[in-house]
Amino acid sequence: MKVTFIHHSSFLVESRSAMLLFDYYQGELPPLDGAKPLYILTSHKHGDHYGKIIYSIADDHPDVRYILSRDVPKRDLPAGFKCPVTYIDPHQEYKDELLRVRTLMSNDRGVAFVCEVDGKKIYHGGDLNNWCWDNGETALEDERIYHKELGRIKKDVFDAAFIPMDTRLKDYRLGIDDFMQYSDAKAIFPMHLWDRFDMIREYLSLDTCAAYRDRIRVIERDGQEFGRLD
Image (tube, rainbow, N blue to C red; front, side, top):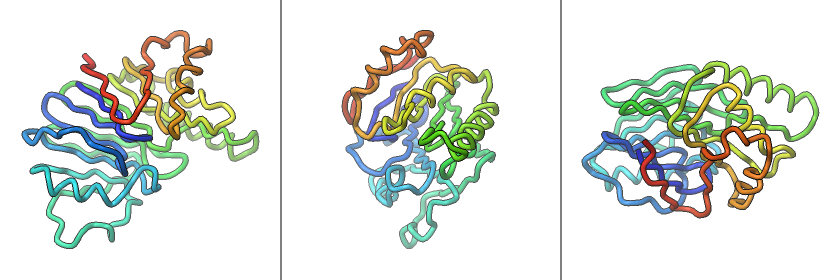
């Protein structure tokens, strides 16, 4: 399985049989293997996770399948669009001959994705996170929902986990630290960084991530590839 960081919260995952493109709205895509189906997954309609550009990808790839959060506007579909589009709600499942997708409920908007393909398990959090903007009731409710949703994947082991680490937050480390208290991941990719890639190395210096420091991937630029994750 190969992972390419595209931009912000967008990643391309390529397995033996399929490609998964998460939360794409801008950035340069690497060459796409036309022999493999491309699944485009959008967690919600926020402009830093979704753009109508996703539909134009079908012009250049022979087999594109869309799995979109229900809040993504159907009116954005181009007239006469022929590719299969599935709109999905929290706590639902999509399954075909190659891919199984389960969703969690975001405490911001839309869904998070739990994907299984070719024996690999992938987590993409979308905007599901411990949003500790302040110390008030809103922060406590966001934390409660985050922990409740993580409880749905308790003890799951992921080959790759894409988890928000929004450096605007007072305590940006909680998204990953909380996730690892419930689940496990062989490779952890911080995302939603607003181009503050330097904060990943700051996070690596903290004692809270000592138990899984060697599994955190250091993102330094858009388009960065992370080889083979076996």
